[in-house]
Each structure stands twice: as C-alpha cells, then as structure tokens.
Length: 268
Image (cartoon, helix red, strand yellow):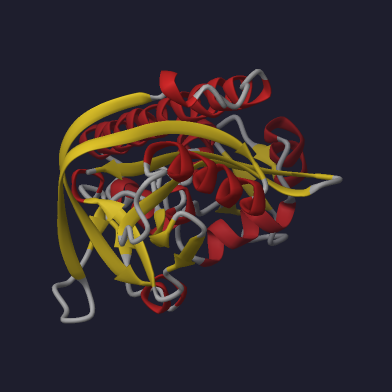
C-alpha cells in the first residue's frame, strides 16, 4: 500500500495552511491524490518532494507560473530546470544584498565623517584643485515628475544620486540659487537614463576651484560661502561666479535640517 499523508499532516509538516495546498491544486501546480470513496485528499512521497521544491522556489520569490512551467512534465530535466532557476535567483539576491551591504558601509562612513567633521575657517588652508568637468543641468520638474529614470535602482535611490544645486555669486554678498535646475557631474550620470531635451543642457567648467566640505544649515552654508568669497575676492566688486553645492548627506535635529555638503567655488 502506498504511503500517504493527509492535508492536515502536510500542513503541519511544512508549516503551511490548508488553503495554500488547495490553491496549488486549483492552479494545477500540485495535485493531490483523491480518494473516490470519501473525497479525501492525500499526498504521496512524490507530491511531498514536489512541494519541497515549490516552497524553496517560492521562498526565493520565483513566480508560481514559472514553477508550474518547470514542473509540468514531472521529469528529472524539469526538476533540474527549477533548481537552475533557484540558483540563478539566489545569485541575483546575493548580488543585490552585497550592493545593499556596500551602500550601508558607505553611509556609515559618511555619517561618521559628518559626526566628527569640523568646519575649516582657516581659508588659506582650503584645498585648491584644477578641474575640467562638464555639469548636466536637469529641470527640477523632470525629477519630480519621474522623467529621469535609473538603469539600476538597486544601486541607490534616485534622491541619493550625487545631485548638486547651483548658486550664482553676483558679488561677495549676493548669492542667487537656481530654483529651476538640479545639476550633476556628467561622469556621475552613468546610472541615469536622460533623454536629450532642449530643457536639459550641459556646461563645461575648467580651471582652479576651491573645494571644501561643510556641516550646517543652508543659511550657514551660504554665510560660509560669503566668507570664502570675501577672503579670495576682497578687492573685486562684480564676480558672476557659478558655485556648486554637492549634497553628501542630510540629517535633522533641533536646529532643523543639517546638511553635509561639498562646496566648489571657481578661482579666477
């Protein structure tokens, strides 16, 4: 006599509900043996082995339709196909988790740097770098209305891309922020899908730039920039400089929004 288990026994053995088994029966994924005399449903070792494969695949979030396709002929080859699919899914999940782990590591490093950061008011010691960069300007409405997409959103959220805001320094005491465009270095756009549009434009920046980081509110950031301008452009009235603010991280406390930013100011 064939060894059989009831629906209740299978439910307890695999820690699943009877409704789950009925659902698998309805969709033709796992059919029980039905006693024609009393209508009771039973499962043999063959169905138990199939259920084990199904639940492993389901745990990996493989769609039931894919599982059904792999098992439809109940052949060894089809079982192998399902296991191959499981292995592929596992590899994809491992890759995804490794990306998340690396992001967590980077975030922790940034937050530790922010926690221990001291703003530099010794302007003569600020870093000056020679750069040759192209900046892409994208309308803010494009970001809000999801017109900008990511090739791989698992790398980071769209808002965590290295966006910049731009200021125009008319003079040492007047900063005008660009309220229409967000900016990003062209070399940071590899993960973005940006369709060419007349509203999107690029601007090349070449020369020496003051590069410094700062922690504080945006009002404090602006005051800090003005101090730097007063130090380096003390004898110049009209400036017309494009200054970029690159967000590294943002936190909130009793003072409000605290920004960790990198400031880039061109030097004539």
